[in-house]
Every structure is written in C-alpha cells, then in structure tokens.
Image 1 (tube, rainbow, N blue to C red):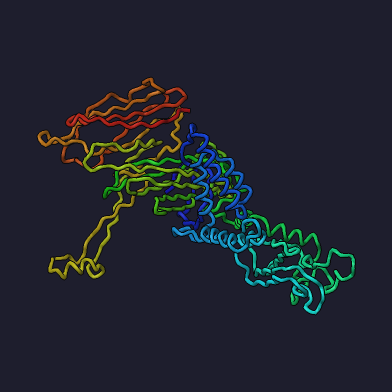
Image 2 (cartoon, one colour):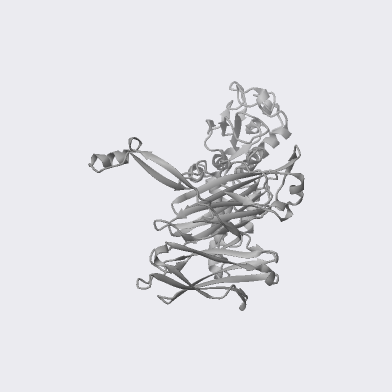
Amino acid sequence: MFGGLAIEKTNKLLILLFTFIFTFHFFGFSVENKKETVEQELSKKYKKWLEEEVIYIISQKEKDVFKSMRTDEERDGFVKTFWKRRDPTPETPFNEYREEHYRRIEYANKNFFEGRIGWRTDRGRVYIMFGPPDFMETNPGGGRGFLFDLSGPTAEFPSEVWVYRHIPGLKTRIGRVELTFVNYYNSGGYRLVSNPALANALRNISVQARDVGYEDPTVGIPGQKDKDLPVNPLEQLTLMAELFKPTGEVLEELERSARLRKLKGIVDAQESLTELSFASKVSYVMGNNDLTDIPISVEVAAEDLTFEEKEGKYRGRINFYIELKDKAGTVCKKSDRLEMSLREETYQRRFTDYYQYKHRVQLKPGEYFLHLVVWDEYSGNVGYIDKRIEVPQFSNNVFGLSDIILARSIRVIEIKKEKIVLELKDSSALQSLEKTKLKVPKKIKIEARDEEPFTFDNLEINPNTLAEYTKNDELVFFYQIYNPTFNIAQKMTKLLIVHQIWKNRTLIATIDKPQEVHIPIEQKTVGLNSGARYDSSNLSPGKYTLLVRVKDIFSDKIIEKKIDFKVK
C-alpha cells in the first residue's frame, strides 16, 4: 500500500520476517511536579533493574540510552522492549528468555552465596550469563592431583571446573570452553581464574615443589589437547575479556553480522536512534460491526534515503513494520518492503519527493500500543515510534464525526468488484442448509471489493501525512458524518456545515460559505463523505488549525473536529 512521487518501478510487496525492534522514542507525558520521595523510590526501582537484575546482559549502548530517559513511562517502555528484543518466540505471550534469566538469578542466589549474594559472585555471574555448564567437576576438599596430574604430589586449593561446549559470539576459540574456579585458602569464595595452574597451592613458595605435578602452566585438564588451550598469557586475558562482556554486547555483534538487521525485536544499537526521520498519522473512522476503522500512513522524504547506482539506475529499499498490541498481546502486525528504481534525471529531482506506506485495520474501541518501524536497507538507518493510542467508539445511533484526514489530492475512482462464485458442493454451510429442506441455490455469486487503505466508497485519498502545504498547494481534506437525523415527514436530513481556518485564536478564513445541505432519505448511509478544498496561496507561512463544525438541524446538535497543519 505505497504511494508517492518519483517511483518509476515498484515491485510487489515482499513480506519480510522481522524480529521485535528495540525502541527508544517512547510514548507518554512527563510529570514535572512529582514529590521528591516518590522520585527517589522509583529511581531505586530502576537502579536495581539496571545495576543488579540485567547488569550481565545489558550492553553499554542500551545502558546509556536507559540512563538518558527522563520519565518513568519511557523507562517502563524500555524495559518491555528490552525483554522483547531477546524473546526467542515474540509471537507468544511467554518470554522464555526473561523467565530463564530470572530463574538463573534465583538459582545463583540460593547456591552460590559466599558471604555476599550469589549473583555478585564469579560462579553466579557465569551461571547467569551462560546457564548451567554442560559438564562440571568439583574438588571441594582440595588435595592433590585434581587439575594437574593424578600421580603428582602438588597441593591444590578446592576448585571447580565448568565445561561449556559452545558459547555464542566467542571469537578467541570455537568449541568447548573450560572455566576454573578456585577457593583460595578455603576462604569460601570461588574465584574464576584465567589459568588452571593458579589452583596450585604451592606456586607462591620458593621451593621446587611448586612445579611438581605439571610441566607447563598452560596445560589444563588431563586429556585436554594443548592446542585447544590459550598459548600465552595475552590470549588468556583476551579470552577472559570476551567471556565477561555483557551478553548484550555479544547480541549486538551477532546482529551486526547479519545482512538483514531484523526490525521486529532487534535494532543495531550502533545506529542512531533518530537517524531516519519519518512522519506518521493515525486516523479514526467508523467501521463495521462496532469496530473502528483505522487508516495509518507513514511518509519518508526521498532526500533522507540512500540509493545505490547499478546499471544506470538508482535503487533504494525501504522496509516498513507496523504492530498493534493490547493488554493481551499482539492484535495486528504487518511488514512490507518498497523498492525504487530511478533514472538519473528522476534521482536528481528527488529532493521534493516522498514515499508513503499505507495500511488500514479495524479494532475494537480501547487502548492500544502502536509500534512503527522504518528501515532504509541500503544505509542501515532506522527510525521508529512507540506510542499509546486510544481507539474511540463510534455508536450506530449517535450523531458524530470521524477524524479529519488531510490530503494532497482526492480523486473519484471506479469501484472494482470481483465476482466470486460459491458452489453448493464446495460449501459445507450451504450443504447443511440444504439438509434442513430449505431451498438452496446450486451457485451463489458474491461481490468482493478490492479497496486501498485510504479509499472510502468511490473516493481515493492521497493523505498528507506531514500536514504541510506550500503556497502553491491546495489544502484538501476529507471526513465522514455519522447518524444525522432523518425527518420522516420531510424525508431528508438537514445539515449546516462550516469549515474555518484559525491561527492561534484568530479566524483567518472561512472556506466557502456556511451552507445547509439536504440529503434525501433514500440516500441514507452509515457514513456521509464530506470535505473541501482551499487555495493555500491565501495563507502566509505558519501554523494553522482547520475547524470542521456540523449542525444537525432537526436535532439541533452540533459537533466539531480540529486538526493542525503548516504552510511553508
């Protein structure tokens, strides 16, 4: 559902697989007058989350973004998307990663207490980051020959060896990793060491006994091939540094290595969070079956996109993702790709062009969370918006107005109808009716309409998502009127419609003259389409408000809607 200028060739929409993106432009309002005690209490909550609960799995960039947030609503949104980013099954309400993480913290606190809480210990940290080892060997009493040579007399401190077959993102070695924890002098605290030889209780004495039991301090567990172990102290330190990077850093590295950075659940934190700007607009009109129709438009300026020249053409790709969620989970998600192929002359004129993505959903009235993502594939730049929306209720018997939709143009189109023939033999429902001895036709013809997201009856709207006009443009707008009173005696409804343009509190212009509209009762519909045009050259540059006021003459009810726009 794309539109816009300078598009010479648009391929069919390709449905992309996205994983939930990380979002840092959040919804809501800041509360400036909170009491200091409340602020302190909330800050402790988020400080605990940042410095205790996710300390081993959050990346530095994520941490910086979290610290830069000003409101608790933003922080709550960050926490939600933080976990969603790591959710292996984002299509389900259960986040296995989050549940496993907190299970590991609880296990570490119960099993690795060493005079300090378990998550702060080395074993606790490793367990939280990598989970239970694939193999574990323990030497709780110390003694001789556990790590080095079973026949040697070398004294050893109590120790444990944890073996992991694979640690994702580890560059130094691919394959199994052995981690040795040493309880020095039976102090009760197991420290992770960079070399198993550090478990030798005699290594700090001056006699030759400290070397008994092993020949090379880099040799590890008996049976381990030497080539699998670090060969020098620098490599050992490098390995340790890689192991103890927060898993969030590893996650980002894995993401950057993928050709397609998946937009649902993952955002490469190296990219600017506001690098790709775009405009979006959500409008509300009456739908069917007590649902609300929601046309959504997203618009990107061509000058903000990156094109690659190939075979004399300039090619660009934009990916769009929309997700709507209620308290129970995702109710709608849609992703599409727009591909452009421009000739040289068109590419040079792109600075005034734009590209649109349009979608339309029907939802029950209520509160939802809207997530929008735009990704320029050639530059890697990402833009996104998260915000709460309140879907209004349109009653079937209450006089009302839809939202005003600003447009660049409105055109009358022929309504395309596709005839579908449903045969009795192909429909179990029709066959069931036939068994009730009702007369059922052998074939039923059904007409299906193929409508664009911004098509209303025979009117196709080209929305102005930016809500900006130049002095050379026409101000065009559209809206619907619902449930006016039809007088049975006069067989009509009478409406007084007023369109005005205001600047601050000053009336600037009245579009046409207020007119009384009469609609015969035989033309009665659920929604009456209405709108107007106005020459923007009569307006000086600045911000304006468009006011639509409709009076139902028979019921004497008045309703109005407003929308802001700019003249450049």
